[in-house]
Each structure stands twice: as C-alpha cells, then as structure tokens.
Length: 358
Image (cartoon, rainbow, N blue to C red):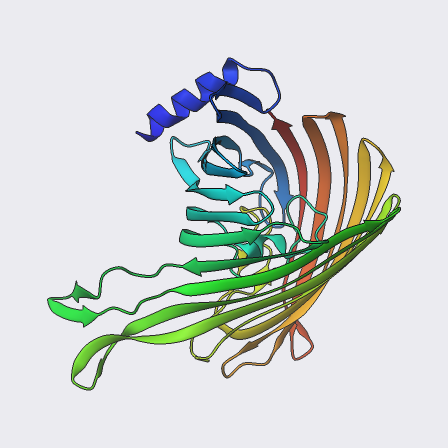
C-alpha cells in the first residue's frame, strides 16, 4: 500500500511543473501535489563524512468547497528514505471556516510547532519544548484577529484499558495530553513583531506495579513551556526563545540537547527531570537570494543524584538560492556540556545541504 501511494504521488508530480502543482480543480474540489528533496553532506566529530536524507517529502493537499466560506480539507505527507522504508508523517482531515479557523483530526503538527521565534537555521537550531506533533490529534487553529491567533490540541491516549504482560493482566494508563498556544504577528512599516507562548502536558507511564491489589502501570506527567519574541527591521531580524520541560517524577527522564551526528544535530540525553534552554538568533538578508545567520544556545539540566549539566553552543550558517525552488546552505555547530565545571561532552558538526522544492 505504501509503495502504491508513493508511485501515485510521484506520477502526479512528474506530470506537472517544477512548482507545487494543482493536479485537479473542478466543482470546488482541488488537489495539489508538492514536496521537496532534502539532502545533507555532514562531517561530525568522530565520524566519517556521510550523505544523509534530511526529511525529503511528498505532500498531497486536498480541499472541497462547501459554500459560505466553509471547506473540507485534508493532507497526506509521505517521507521516503534511502532505504525502502516510507514513513507516513502527516495524515489528517477536517474543516476550515474563513474568518474563524481550522479544525482537523489525525496525525499532524500541534500549535507547539509554531512557537519558536529564534531559529533561523536549517538543521541545528531550535529549542522548543512544547509537544509539537502527535499520531492521534484533534487540532484547532484560529484565524488571525488583528495580529492575534491561538491554537488548542488534544492528543488521544491508549484505547486499550488493559494489556497482558508475562501472562498477567495489567491496567494501562490513558496517556493523553494537550497543547495550548497563542501567537502575535504584525508589521508596522519595515518593523515586524512576532511573539508566541505555549504550554503542553503529556501523561506518561512507568513499569507496572501492584496498586491496591491490582497490577497497574505507574504514571507521571511531562510539562513543556516555550515563549519567544522576534523583531525584524528591513534586512535584519533578531529572535529570543526560552523553553522548559520537566516531569513530576524525578526518577523519569525528559530530553536534553546534545549533538547527534546522524540526525541533523538534534539528539537527546534522557534521565533529566527538568531542563531549561535559551536561544538567541540573528539573521541578515544579504541579498534576495542569500542570508547569513548565527545562534547562541545555552541551558541547564537537572538530574536525580547528579550535578546540574550546563551547556553552551554556537551555530553559524549561510544559504544561497540558486532558483526560487533550489537552495543550498552551509551550517556548523559547536556545543559542549559541563558538570561541576568539568567538560563532560563536546561535539561539533558541519552540514552542506541542498533542498529542491517541487
């Protein structure tokens, strides 16, 4: 089935121009096909230079006009890899009302994906700690009201109430969650202002234990928070983000940033029960086709029975648009972590990237 979907999508793209194309438009029904090929040549510490697929995708968007500003909308996005595997990264449908907003259901991004304001990079930047996607999500995204908008998400948990483990029936937690966020975007001449704030809570499970005579999974909560501000003027832009993620069970871990050389620089280190991160980003648009950017990241992680881990990192990069649908970039990061004043890890990596959009 996956191979069939890939074949259909590729065939549709091949039959159209190099831009995201409308392949069907009749009686209020519209189908658009687009996507991008994203490749990275990466040299990272203690690894050989490697060629990586960095999220190449084929996207099919569909809509049906229902009249009076109401429409049905849907999206399918698949991500092929160098291997024969193909991942369905987006699969959702819902309704859009002009002037009100969009209500969708499925495998999709939450409002948390829109919160970061300081990340001008292609690979290594970004510190958002609010849950930004889910496999089973009910998502509402409001329209823009004088520059203000908001989003609300509900993430469905386990449908099964029990499961069998080693011949025993175990009570299963409902690992549901929710996300809320608010945004502001406006321009005053050449001055642009963007601001965002968001919060998420996810229910998690631990290994099963006997509670009141019943074998049941333990539970705890992970909470995420992100706020950000971006100011742009003419060709300059500066952004700042603060993020936090924590758990109410100190024995459980949340993610903490280190460099993962085989995944675009966004690796995780667990066993921290609270993390705080900060990011300051700067961008200058040299020409219409090229920009340069830099970012400073720093933060702290708290772990049970360990000294706090503090980290500092720097990112520099530049890009060039060969064509409106083709961009190349060079981006590097150096980052290190310390405990009690001693360096406990240090990483660096350089990416030479190419993205072709269709």
